[in-house]
Image (cartoon, rainbow, N blue to C red):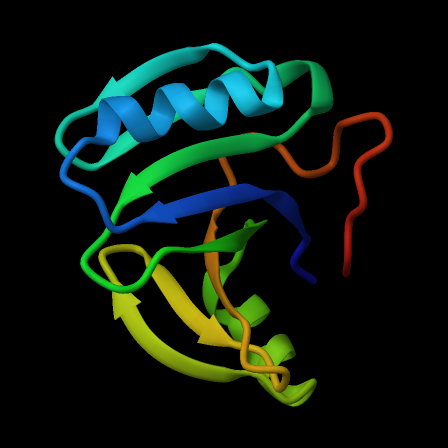
Length: 124
């Protein structure tokens, strides 16, 4: 049986200035920008909230999406399909999916052991 949990939020920004977008969202949330992966990502320090929050430069309209992390990407995508989600596109090592409500989200590989963690929601 696989395990999955909410990993965090990705702020998709259709912008040419990722630094300015990252600085705005960091200041808005009171979280400093701690890492940049030019030209596409800026990560905010959300560790005190046990979340991953990043600002991402995109070519589609700006929006916010969430990531679900899992130790078995295909098993989690299958579970979510049974709940009514659609697989939209496989990108690198993750699935972009769409909820029955029209919201896009990603199913990504877990960055840490999902059997540990206090206050973390884990679905099985």
